[in-house]
View 1 (cartoon, rainbow, N blue to C red):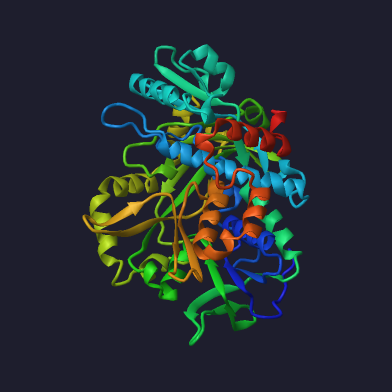
View 2 (tube, rainbow, N blue to C red; view 1 turned 120 degrees about the horizontal axis):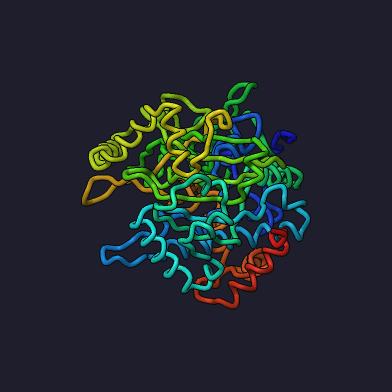
Length: 498
């Protein structure tokens, strides 16, 4: 990666070198080739935080296996609305990536995306009943028609032999399996996208540059940024700023002073993985297998045993095990959380602390876990797991959104949210999972909010339709279109080789 100094103050400043900034930069440069862009990353390399493969589940979230996207209602029915939204969002990502492959921007797609079946595995009569209802509800929709269900141990053993070894035949179990699942190395994808951006005229990628302050430029629609690097403090201005710095976006949003950012707080959650790289085990498991979350567990802590392909090497990951740190970034400061407290977000923060006792208890329990406890959790998935075959890796930091709520004072919100100034000149992305997988959908939403006039033009509309053929048409309501774009991206991205 070559860092380049900007010749002039850019039209667009992208703060953070992760998948979100990379995606937005690629989209804007394709829509308006003459736009000047500066990407500022505090680390000496891009994709070092939430986009990094070891910090990210890499599931390619399509709602095929994640139970938290299909909640059971009071009447016992399964609500699949969120699953449909997530699935469609990932299809948008696949379409952009396929177009970039066709344009030779992303060469060798197997470097960042590979076919890996997505499964859900449950134990106990209640779990089996729930999974069957979920399967029946999802497979009525065209997006999930390839899903299979089984409560037969022998059949499940064909899918995931390691999970079934030495498991009691008396215990009720069930699983679903979708062959259309993927494993995505978002770190590799981000680096490929930013490498492409760095080669474009009018684009600068500045590593080791930390944005420490943002202020509206006096008497102008532009913004001033104060940037710290090893050379000292520099200043630059930009017409549009995107804060895509993961957990670091919240403090910068607060410094911007835009009214839309007031009242937001953040709750950081750290993570760890158990990792196995022994070929004797890795070669016998090919699936991402999600289970049911513990009571009080945040959605990002749903246990799963994943096949991962990172930099061409296959491994198994189990977790994540949650924890608590006051850092907003893996490479952040322990002062991040206390320094984020403001008069306008104190009430929401306290309200969330009051209303989320189960989450606090869960996190305390996770922090106090011993190696024996973690292996016990793994053995619920993998009865024959041996401690000697697994080692612990630190995952990334996630900062969940806390926002004002008229009735409760404040709520803890999972997922992601775009916060933008009224004039669209500054936008920030807050929150976490399933962000990376739905980056294209999120950035399209951001572009519509921040560039409302340009996106209405025939030029931008035509370019978006070329990049994303289903743009503007709901895939969830159009089976023929869904099948057409899904089949095309499967072929272009090399996912048919499974």
